[in-house]
Each structure stands twice: as structure tokens, then as C-alpha cells.
Image (cartoon, rainbow, N blue to C red; front, side):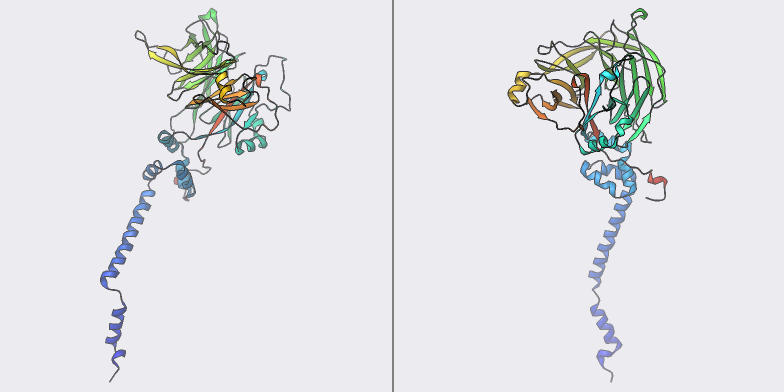
Length: 436
């Protein structure tokens, strides 16, 4: 009689006893199938650019920057200009102090046969405040840019008046030579305008306005300007009618707020030019007269935290900051302007709160406002640059590296350069290739 344990029935019974019950087996299979369906759903969602964009727009910057390592597709999407624009609108612009560009006005406004720049002195000195700035100085690339003129939205305008101008992107390291202007101005001022249009191709749109500083009184107070557009890649000359008898201060750079240009004018005036206004005119208003700075020596323009023009002036007694308000006129479609004092800080107050700064023996020079920072300005005392907090009346020294270059401070314009913090993709759009 065959052994029952070796019978096929016994083998089948043994096999059935070792097999998981139907309920447990089906449960684990269901969980596996559920995880797989969730994984497929997540993959499908992340494969959609619109959904991925909405997810990334909700994440802080430190997480977004890590995701550029996921794939070329994610790298391109994060580095794309339209995405960066949307992200900055929601989270704000992230910048860092790259350094201070120095422009010696003695060489820019050099008459025929006047003072020449020594060869050992760089045309574009940089007071570096970070490692990237140190690397830029040691690379020798600054020698190819000429003199510093202005910067906007991270782009740097530089060159040699009156013919050669460059636009340089410090992130991509791309330098673009512009066509030569058609008009020759003996003395001029300039403005650099970038436009936030969010083009799909990622190119930055910008304009450059050159204005003659010779007001022609005999031609009904007119000022000649020449405007370059990166859209047309040409210079266009036009004539502006002045609202009063004045001229623009030579070799100054305009401040641009909402596409409106503000220039310093002669006789303590401020010139206002709106390129989008249908009338080709330029208006002039008087600058405010302060109590501490009636003998002011330095003045600056900038944008306040609420998007208005602010004016700063400094002298031996201290510094003052004013805000320009504009209101719609009741009769005409023009604006009426009024100045309001926002901050006043005397040299005595700064000396009291900063006894080791040496402000008692050195006159403070206001250098620049800080973009959308209403409480601080950059000032200079001797060869030291400080961050001055107006509310707390404290000074914080800004360490910089100038590679042993001697700076003639009294004849130089010192401008802080804030570099935008955003990754850059050297790859083309992966949606147009087979490799994602």
C-alpha cells in the first residue's frame, strides 16, 4: 500500500498548506498594484510641464535649485526665463552683493589732449565682495569691457564713450557688442532700461537712451536723444521739448522706475522723461533743500520699497532721504510732484552710535541705495565702505578685495553690483531633442 505521505493528494495538500491564504495574498497584491498606480500617476503628473511648474512655484528656492540635478528637462524648465519671472513675482528677486564697480570720471570726460589713464590702472576696477568676484578679477576679462556705465536686472552696460558699448551678462559670461550710435554728443548722460516681457525664447529685452547735455535755448529748449532697442537692433534719434530752461548734468546715469527715466539736471533740478508718453517732452522739477545738507556734496537717486523715486544727499552735517510723490493734475493729463522727507541722520548721531568709525574726522559720502531696502544705504568714509542702517543709526563695514588697485575716491563713482542668484542652463530645450 503506498505511503500516504507520498501520494499526489498528500503532496497537493502540503503544497496548499504552504501557499498563503487567498485573503492575505490578494491583499499584498492589491497594495502592490495600488503603489504602482500611484507611482504611475506621479510620473504622469511630473511629465506634464504645466503641473511640474505649479509644483515648483510652491517650493522655496533652496529646494528648487536642487532639482536641476534631476534631469536636463528639469534643468531647462527651472532655468527658463518665463519660469524665473513667475517665481520672482511670487517669491521676490534673490540677489547677492557681487562687489562694487568703480568708474573714474576723469577719464570718461577727458578733453582732447587731457589726462590719460595709465596702463597699469584698470579701466574697470572691481571691489570684490565674494569668491566669484575674485575669480573675475584674476581672469582678466574685465579688460575687455571698457568703463563701467550702469547695470539693470543683472545686465551690465559698459564700454567707451562715445562709440563702443557692450552689454554683459555676468551669469552666462556673454558679452554683446552693440552697433555704434549715429549721433555724436560732446557731453551726454545715459539710461539703461530692461523690460520684463517674459519672452518664450528667454532673451532679455533692453533699451539704452543717450541724451545730449547741451540744451539748445535758441531752438525752444530742446534736447537731442538717441535710443537703442535690442528688438530692432538700431539707434533712433529724436528731439525732446524741455518744460523749462535747463540742461542735463553731464556724465550721469539715469534711474529708471516703471520705464520712466529720472536724470539729474543743472541748477539743482531733476529731469523726468517718460518714453511711453505720447508727447516727446522732458519735464524738470526742483530738488528739495534740506536742513542738514544745504551744503551737500554728493547725491543719489534710487527706487524706494514702495516703488517711488527716492533722493539722497550727504554733506558734512549728515545725510537726508526724500521721497517723490506724484499726483494726477486736475486740469491736464500731466502729474504734479511733491517731495517728502523720509529720513534724516546727522553726523553727530552716526558718530555717537559708531565711535570707532572715524566719522568725526571724515565726511560721509552716500554711494547708493539698496534695492527695495528702505532702511539702509551704502556710504563711504575714507577708503572704507559701510552699510548704514538709518533706523538703528549703525554702520557695518563691507569687506572687499581690490587686488592692490589704488582708487582716487574723489573723482570716482562707486556703484554696488547685485548679481541675480539663479541657475543657468547651457543645454538646449530637451523637448526638441531625443535625450531627456
